[in-house]
Image: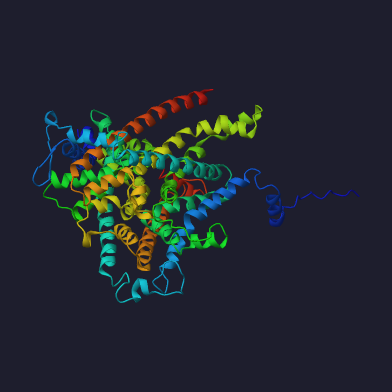
Length: 310
Length: 300
């Protein structure tokens, strides 16, 4: 009788063994990289989590933890986000600007992306070039120029909500174009050509074939526009007329330079969670629409790549 | 046949918007900077005709920025801050992007989400977080005193160069890591395998293959964070507020918010924009060359 040799299974090194190997040679490849990466991630996220924690502090301190409380959100009758008009107005103003920005910039940007991708002829090169400018112009230059244009040229528009919306849309359009155009390139032209071969007019091919295929990019760009509008500080500040037109970032900036209360942490936390929720919804919608197009398990990577602006 | 005008028409609203609210406003800055000032009310009076432009204010700003001028130090400080912040960002960002693209394995998706996460958290929120930690009785001082690095609390927020530079790094580094990751992730592994098969050491393979092929990502990311850093004024204001850490952006901010002379602010904005345009042109030329070189590498 012959004995069948047992296939030799090499035991996976236990976590402890691996840890010991690490300690013996912490700089062996790519362990140093692992350490750098995770330290970076902790460094980039933990301070924000601590700021969120202090928005729930029971006392006025932002440095000494005195127990959990909801006073800075709604409990405090004077200084909470709910009861301090400066803070609740800022929250309303931020949402107002972000929603208006999405409603205006996304349709304009989608049409511009389509036009720039398909329009071959005089003027298309220039239009392509102009589209790139807002992406690389420092916000302070844009802030100065918008402030001056509203005080010297379009004098019928005063600083305040309208001017802020116009400013936000101006820097948002290019982001929509970049995201939608990337999707257009990955779709290619074959679906449109097939529609044309089957007798669809260009307009019908656009509405029945191209726009449905663009849905994930449109959803992603709406989430991005909401996020960059909610995050924007410079344009909102330069075009603010003070008081109720100050947005959340403007309030955080002003309060931090004075003597802030944890209510500032609270308003920042509310804004952050709203933005993250919207981006998550954008991501899930995007994943739903592109299911079957992508390699399994790579949704996050592809979503990340949608925002690669270079 | 409307086939011909369908696409230009679809681009029209966007193009019109950008012309009216991007190009015209920029021209307004030029008209104000090269205009005159009302001698009684000190209000800027823009000149719209380029043939009548008055370069007096622009000369004034340039002489202030020249050696010996009152803004010379601010200008140098701005450049030093940006260069150090950029170098630190690359030093931290490159290994992170490299690890995520090459070695993260099954963690790749999670790490990528965690790297993208700060992009969705408001810049002001992230600055606020550090202002809290850096208070006199904040956790940073507590930690440094607990570990006996410091014997008494340090005033981090009263005009420290280190604080401003680290705040700039903290604020802008996520925008650098993403393009770096994209460039590194695009590199075809067979190039690397070929280099290793031909006897290159891992370090040499990195230096001769990976690094050159990620050049476009390095440059792209560097430009993406350098341009806004040069126009930054809120970061030094929020983590320091002292004149000793003021940057060019702070001077522009001062001349518009509370300052009496928007014309000087506009002229300084023009100088800043011109400087950044030169930087941008240099970047575009380098990218063009790098792409041509990368093309030959691919062909070989």
